[in-house]
View 1 (cartoon, rainbow, N blue to C red):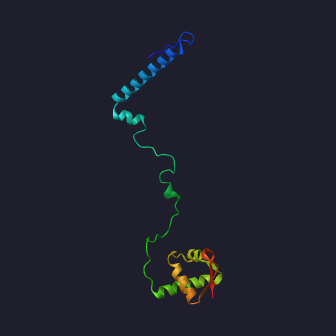
View 2 (view 1 turned 90 degrees about the vertical axis):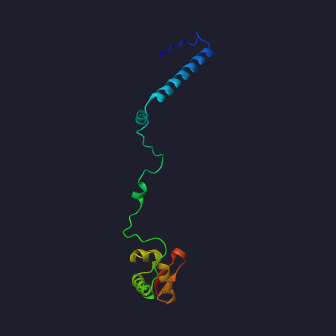
View 3 (view 1 turned 60 degrees about the horizontal axis):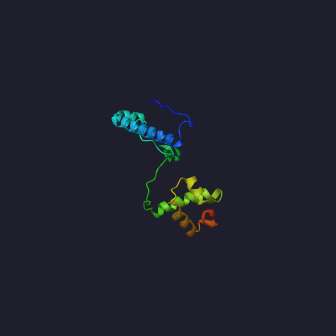
Length: 146
C-alpha cells in the first residue's frame, strides 16, 4: 500500500481529512482481516505465549520469602487444657527467668519460647499467689520476683 501525500497548498484541509479517514479505515479493516485469518497458535505466540501477565504489585512467591520462618508451628485455635501442675511448672520457669532482671511479657515469651496464649493465665496465677509482682500498664508492664 503506497501513500502519496500532496502538499498542503495543493489540497484543502477537508480533502486531507477525508484521505486520512479512508486510510485509517482501510488499515483497520486489513488488520482485522489478518487477525481473522491467523491461527490461534500464531495469535498466542504474538501476544506473549498465552501465559497471562501479572499486573503491578508484589511478584509471585514474594510473600513466602518475606515471611519469617518459624521453627515449630503451633496449631491455631485454643490451647489444650493445662493441669495446675503444668501451670505451676511454667510459673517456676518464669520466676527463674525474672530473677535476673524484670522483664515484659513478650521478653519472657521469647526467652522461654512459650506460646503467647500460654502467658496470661500463668502470669495471673503468679500475681495471685504473690510469686510475681508487676509494675506498669498494658504492654509496658514489667514482671519481677515478689
